[in-house]
Amino acid sequence: MFRNLLPHLKNKYVIAILAFVVWMMFFDRNNFINQIRLVNTLKGLDEQKEFYQREIRKDSAELHRLKTDTTSLEKFAREKYLMKKENEDIYLIIDKEK
Image (cartoon, rainbow, N blue to C red; front, top):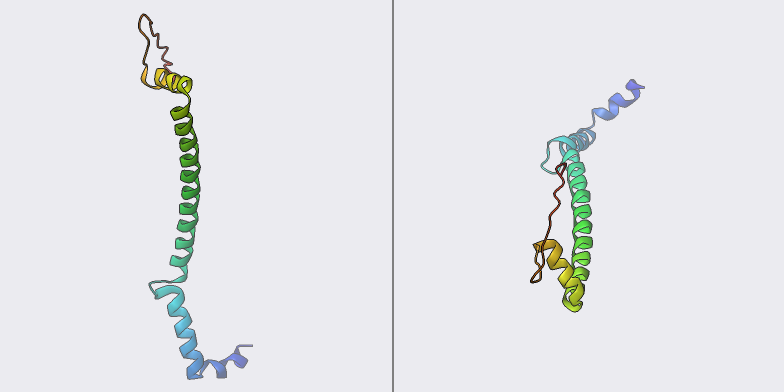
């Protein structure tokens, strides 16, 4: 089998094509390994983009709800910023495990 390939490997065009392929696969700036790494990075960035878009939609809905509903705004202020009404006491229960 190797004897059948030997005359073809002596051809200058075959040698040039093989050298070009080896160069592009391993030594070039945009080599095969780097392309795989870039594709994996792109997939990760697309996942992050989807995550942040979902979070933006969720937060936008929450913001709209807070702007339109005063009871939800009051509840948010009481829970998040520990605000209280006059003549009202607040008791915080802190979990030591967290």
